[in-house]
Image 1 (tube, one colour):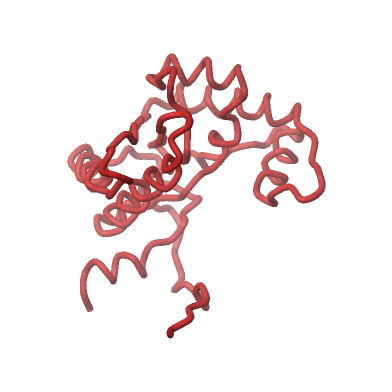
Image 2 (cartoon, helix red, strand yellow; image 1 turned 90 degrees about the horizontal axis):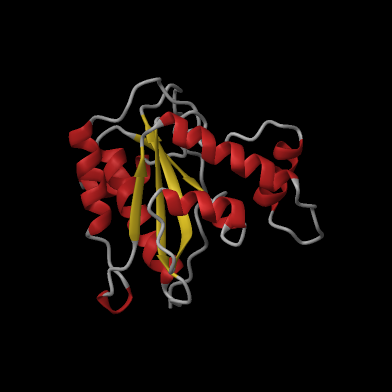
Length: 192
């Protein structure tokens, strides 16, 4: 089987990590794979923020928990956001699952292709990570706090520019769980 296809099919969302940092050479390869992702009009405005400092990651989780705990669940709300709010109200939010690396993807405010461009970068990084036996998991929590002043102010101290918003992110590290073959029927396809 083609190695790229194999990496795509092997990729899993991992939520249990070993207590060791991602090898620097592997991290550079993962980031570089993301930097080569396509972007609308070849704008290349996705800003990759790599955080490997546990204190910073813990502070992000602390702010997120405080801010999500202030929110109320409403009808029609996305189930992942509901779970995040409920976990925060219980004081149990951990969206990084103690992974040693957090990578945030930001792009320009008002840029209509921001989410798509960042997601292309994220997917390239996840496939590259899988090919290197580095585990990842897509995370949304900080995107949901794009208009939260406490979170935005802290993210600016980490390099988020005034004209940017967080579109998505991922966590990375070495898996501490056994991953079973994925039982997935896959997305629907229509051939014409």
